[in-house]
Image (tube, rainbow, N blue to C red; front, side, top):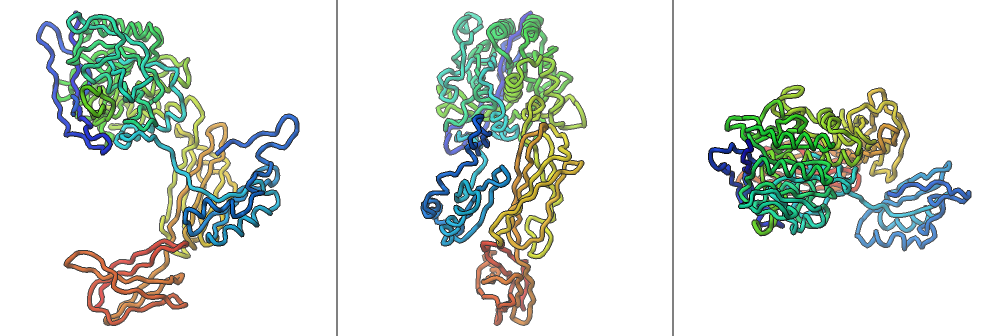
Length: 615
């Protein structure tokens, strides 16, 4: 007997798109039409309004990197001019020289007034091939205006995942309420789809590129919304092709027989992955056969685990069918969403609570909404599968399922459980099981990020593969850049048997420390950089209406603040210049609570002492 399917979702309209303000969320369930047919529902809660070094040329000529760049020949003032225009008081002059057949980079931090002379000397250095003024770089991220609200993408490392694999050759069928083909954030994303509905709801035919409900459009955007286009949101796997197969009507309801037709159509027309953000609490043999047909053709089927945990928690189909990846939903705190079904059929979990994505503009003017449900978690897993299939097309359905499970982040009780399955899907770890990825470098054992002058500053960096393997005996370069010296010194070392590299130095000034894993067959190169904010050593001594301070090394200025108990604020009341020995004294002070400050300098971080009482 075929059953009736419906969608039940919670949605928040993003009416104030650029301001990033959404309307309050409202959640309600859509009731299934009566009796003769059991209800199935789309499982969501309802809507609320540097370049590579060149190799030697085969003709024996010098490789491009070892020839002198124009920067060595230009007037020093011309090299420095752009940096001087920024108004910076100190500049880092960078010299690249050829030493022992390889490039060696050195830096010198100097006052801006000395930059031209420093560049002049650098250009005359033996083996110099390039001279420049250092510039800052930053991690790249999408420029989509609503991207900051996509906590799910941040949790799963969406930008990193997309940067490591192109899913342009992968098609994911969204078997749902259709997809708005005119949405600006889905432009160029859709491939021809289909429609399978009862005659009264529109019948069979069409391309599936219309969505009177909004659910399917939201799902499609989670997978493949265009990224970095300065519009709206970004998908987990931008570039993926979406095949819209409409099997649910404008109310988010449909027959399981129509869903079965949609699954068969998707399997026969090039879908690599099928996303089923829908479900029923009644198994249906027709839909089961359609799903197993798709699996036999090598299509990975991902389905929502259900939103009825608080309403009986009955198994949801098709998620509970064999060979289907059943998905649970988690919150931003990585806990199971209260509504997310539990059961042996739950394979993995993914973010599903408060997910922002595309929505038909004719339904919500902004074209974006926030929704919650296992329907929103499912497409994140489907997008992950798209990336795995793109990286290795030969993966079987069983291999994909095993890979997702073995790389998931365990949540809840230790090991697999009925709430999270194998755990939170880890797209990047799964992908890096198939290909070599950058090493993961983590810090530990740091004595203090704000050491006092003259004390030892320590830290340990551990190098692992993206899948957690220890990178023992790996080549590592450790560099120190103390501000008071204005230069960087580096040394090449090897990690120990546990993949660790210790960093230790005596703090004299603000010091940048970088550790670079140089790359092996197990992991590609990566760098971690931290800054120790070295501070002065400050001691205080109170006397009758006086406060003496000693600063080492001496500071030019010491600031004295008094606490205003009425306003509950600190106010600067005095300042003093330290003696050659670093001493200063404040006398004739009214009784009260005071603190001392030393402002930040080019070599030392600012410091604020604790409160002291003067009587």
